[in-house]
Structure formats: structure tokens, C-alpha cells
Length: 420
Ligand code: PMP
Image 1 (cartoon, rainbow, N blue to C red):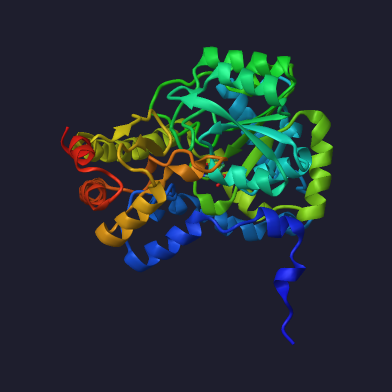
Image 2: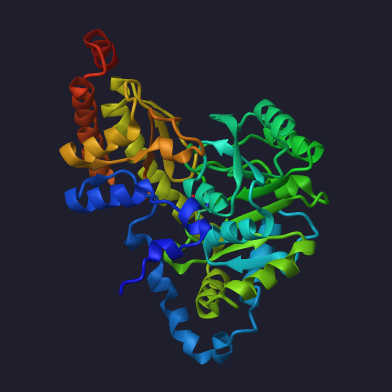
């Protein structure tokens, strides 16, 4: 007799893990093979594999990498390299040593660990609206109750954060201060200071998720929250090599205040004992042997070029139709608002099926349903000049025809949206 697995699922699996729009769109994309303006992952030829080959070969000479225990918090040399790098950049306070660094399988795993450690059922987590969808899903899995903070092109609006604190008393603020996913916003220094003051006043822990920091097209960025907080140890900082080397290496890190390091490592025991040290060894050797400044410059140029391709094609094809876009100064994303689109998911499906172009619907980045239904997120991570041009040309056609096909929109409105 076949087991009824649905009845065996935990309440968590049943109630808090649901299918995502990504699976839906993924299935449609597989069928229609659209020009892709949605994926936040670079083309594979970007990955520095030739430069890493020698370090992959060297793994086999290092038997110490293959045990469970020696590298519980992660490969020591890499933790040391990270801490030196962050100090050289001046982004962490002096109390941060390699003892405060715990390596993870990417920031996503860090978010999962933090959820396990700090989020109970009904724990109130304040999030940017919009925010990184997989972080929302991870906190939700742990039972979080979300409160949304209003944002603009400069990230969190401090007054909104204060109101949220007064009314809901959140215990955590989750924020992506640099080149936010999905909006691309960067929070300026005065806002960061005010937000930190509010976090102090209302005793809120800040999770600072910073995977795009080094994908920057500007000379300098405002100080990190963890740096600003200094001796006030209420910030957990997350970094990642996904955008610097490759997402598939699954390598990131958390900077943790000392009192929670031990608990985090105990948690690791219950999950996975340790992480693949051979991979961390390769990352460590790579970092130790490159000139990080010129390497970062190369990455920044790679993405900047792609950003410009996308922006100029959007300017050419979509902006005349009324699309409002941000002009990012780093990261991977262009956030946009489309007048006339009332159901972004429906529009995206229409565009894939009928015009062979895909973008990311913006509403999925909100913790509460029914918001951002006229927004779209573009990614320039893997496009070249040709795909940007062709993708935007197709999208403009999709947009015009979607608007005209839509029975919900009156004739006059159509005219003003398309031709004004
Ligand atoms: N945080 C943010 C804001 C992200 O956009 C992503 C993925 N792109 C992650 C965390 C997870 O990244 P990774 O696990 O690859 O480090």
C-alpha cells in the first residue's frame, strides 16, 4: 500500500512551505525558452575557473580537509583572510576577529541559521517592502510574523521604521543596505545612523545582508551598520562569495557577536556537522593569490557594462511607453514600475508565452500579498548587448499588446498609457 506522505508532513512543511512562483515561471520558461532579463546569476564564462584550477588540484594533497571536526566554524585560513579584508576596508569594528566569523554555504544558509537561532513562532521581523523573497520565505518557515517598512529610492524610510517599532515592537530588522534586491537602492549614511538609533531605542537586532557590496559602480559606500554600531553589538553581518566568484561554490560568512558564536556552532552540529572544507580551501587559496582590488575592478566592469546595455535598451524601448526605472549604481538589478499593469505575474506569463521574453514579477518581493502588482525586476547579470536589445524590444511589444488585449482598461486609458 502506498503511504500517504501528505499526512506525514510536519505542520511546518504543510503550513509554511509553499510552491513558489519561481517554479511556475521556471516551467513556462523551460517550454518557451525566452530571452531572459530575469536571472540574477552571471553567465558561466564569468566564473574564474581557470584561475582556480591549480587550487582544485591541490585539494588532494590536503588530507586535513577531509575530516569532520577541524574546521567547524569553517576553514581557518579563509576566516582569517575575510576578517583582514573587512578590517582593511574599515567595515567592521575592532572587536571582530576570526573567532566572530562563521562560514556558511552562502548567505542563504546564514539566513536559515539565523532563523533557527532567533526566530520563534510569531517573532516579529521588520522587513523592507520590497525585500529579498528567499529571505522572507526562510523567516516565514521559522514562523516569523512580518511587519513591512516603507522604502523609497534610498532604502528604508526611517519614520516608517520608527512607526513600525512603536506599533509592533519587532525583535529583528532584516535589511539589505547596498544595491538592495530587488530595488537596487543604497541607504545613505544619515539614514543608516537614524535607523541604528531607532534600533537602539526599541532594542531591535539588525540582520545586515550585504552580498552586493563589491558589485559597486561607485567609488565608496556608506559605512556598514555593524561598523556604525561599533561596540553596540546588535548587528549580524552577512557576506557572500556568490557574486564575487560563483554561486555554485556555496561560500559565505556571518559576523556574529561573541555570545552567540557557540550556540551557532552547536546548531551546526544538529544540521550538518561541518561544511565542505575542500571548497573553502579553494576559495581561500584563490583569495590569497589574487590582487583583490584589481579582481574586484574586473567584476565591477563586467557588471557595469551589462547594466549599461540593459539601461540603454530600456531607455530606448520601454521608458517611452511610461516605464519608470531606477538607475542602479551597483548590484545586479533594475527595479521598475509599469503604469497600466495591474497584475505583474499575469503580464510576465503573457510576455514569456507570446513574445519570448522573461522578467521577474515585482509583487513576489513583498511579504504581504496584493502589493507591487505594477512592478517588475530586471537583472543585467548575464545579458549582453544583443540580448538586452532584443529582450527590451520584445518586452515593449508584449507591453503594448498586453495593454490593448486587456479588457479591464478603457480605451482612453490605453491611449494615454501607450502614447502619452
Ligand atoms: N541575500 C540576498 C539579498 C540575495 O540576493 C541572495 C541571492 N542572490 C542571497 C542572500 C543568497 O545568496 P547566496 O546564498 O548565494 O550567498
